[in-house]
Length: 123
Image 1 (tube, rainbow, N blue to C red):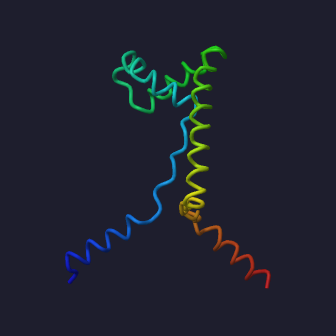
Image 2: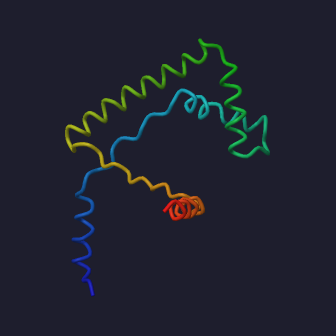
Image 3: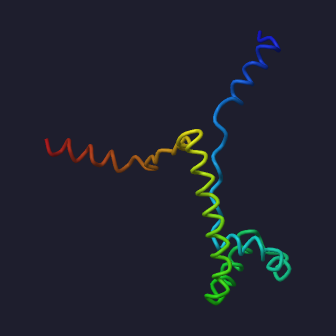
């Protein structure tokens, strides 16, 4: 059995670990999407989220370079703020922990069995 005080001490040690690193900034398209999603939803009320993103993507591609530049400037400002926050984080806490990647396993093992049979025949 764990006493309540021991439980509190265990929970405190977890909170003493590094804070989460700053989140990556949004790209120009995602800034555009967040600002214009409601308008796209009004035009296509029954559309799924993925379809709304597709419609917004087509609208974004149709924008002129000067219109896109406004969103790119916002994205650049967000990137600069992120870089500054990440530098402060690294100075204080070191490099953020890397996320564990899932290993890619082959779905079919049939290819391996064929190779083994060829090796056996060659001998």
